[in-house]
Length: 374
Image (cartoon, rainbow, N blue to C red; front, side, top):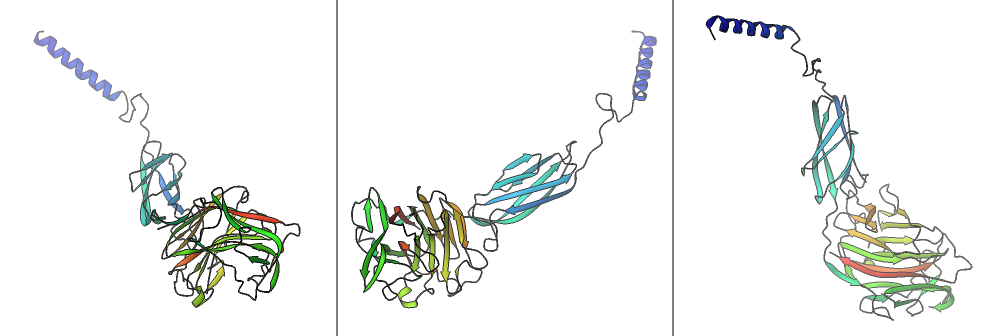
């Protein structure tokens, strides 16, 4: 190429570059349209709710579950980030998340709000979350009721002496006996049978009999599981409960009472749990007695449990948390639960505030097992 032609090519190239640079705006997009302006989300909020939190369970019910609600103007996507590396993305800003770190721990939740242009803002909150410790691993005592016939005398003592002038408290109408008619083991379970029959003991005649078994084993702190099927019939009053081993010296309620399960036949389908101590009986610290609806209480087995540590009593049914007693101030009036307690299984009949069905004949509480862990 001669010098003249080379110069002409360079001139044409410069002209083309000039024309291209003048033919559109520097803000044009790749398809010739204007580049979209950045959209920055604003007003990002994050609300966190602890599942099961109340006045007695400030850090939740032990499940470790929180509910997060994030909201921001011009946001189309939210990304939540948790301390264990978990990330959850959605478009609603609403999620539930469960922590697994046991005990009470301060957790940090981050949330990022993204706009349609990919711009984002973020915020975070910290919250103390309680996860029930999985510490009750060692089985230290149990009765599986796998030996037919008599109730194990190594494990249980029949309580038959009625302390209230030949009667029991609360207006109950039964005598407790140590007969096989009222308590026996068969087909892998304990049967406690309440019956309508005239029976005289301590010079007093009552029209019902039943059984009350006290464990010879006592303990402080742990978990107790009792798998049971409850009796039915108006007037029945089955209970799975505990009493301080020092009750004969300090009396009731100073010894402390823990009602793992109570049921009244005139309130079918309602199962309760409660505590009794000098400061209050039943519902305490503005928390009502724990109540659960169980439609199949008499036809199916359920596991009634207590988790007991040095600061709290937690009640569960089928491993689901139901109720807790955890006083903020612990002294002899509010917290006698720092000493041994023993287990009681019984079915009472009648009470000062309810009567027995006149057509009642008998009904049975069936216990599959009693297990204590520490």
